[in-house]
Image (cartoon, rainbow, N blue to C red; front, top):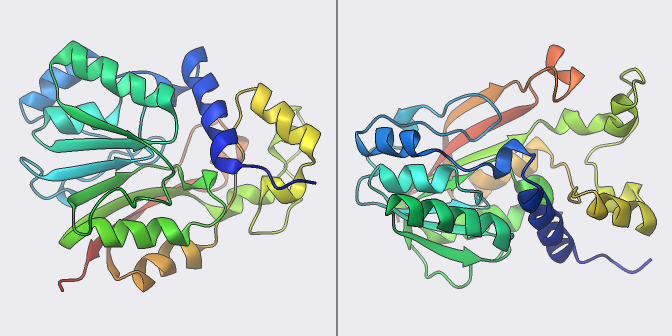
Length: 264
């Protein structure tokens, strides 16, 4: 089977999801939230439900912030309204369009850039004070280049706020769960759709607006941040909700890290 073009497949899938508008990750923030952010009362999420501690951000007013794989008219507009100079970088042009729509509606300035989260070569070294990277690296086969690029474009003492899925989430057959079958361990970790699905199944996922996903070990999610020159300074786990997955009753399904770049 020909190796699928993951970046292109996932762009089309997210464009479809964004156009359909059903996913909570494609619904734009309202005007009230932007007005609150301008007053200094704001919050954002890296994982499905838990608010990121404000202490993780330090002072973002006037700082250069990269919202990485974070389009959809949600976090980027809030951070811009809170006073940051925001660049929104996303694989999906439809998700970027939603950032643009909110920015125009609310009179915000957000720079929009489309591309692969593992390739930030258009940005110079030490371009950003903070990177906000919500749970989205499930859409890349290898997460290590993402961390290396984040470390490169961060300034010394810059901060990377990242959310990611609990690797154990991918032990289970979620399609079977949706069909009412019991929770059963089925897959070996790290999981990859490209290894478990054939070309027809992959095409079916895309037509349904579902992206190709990959799990990553904690060694790659956390250890590779450290190897890239970052220091882990904060951590929390998050649950989802029972409607999203029955696994919610048994374990946290995601987690988040605050990492700080070592001074050069």
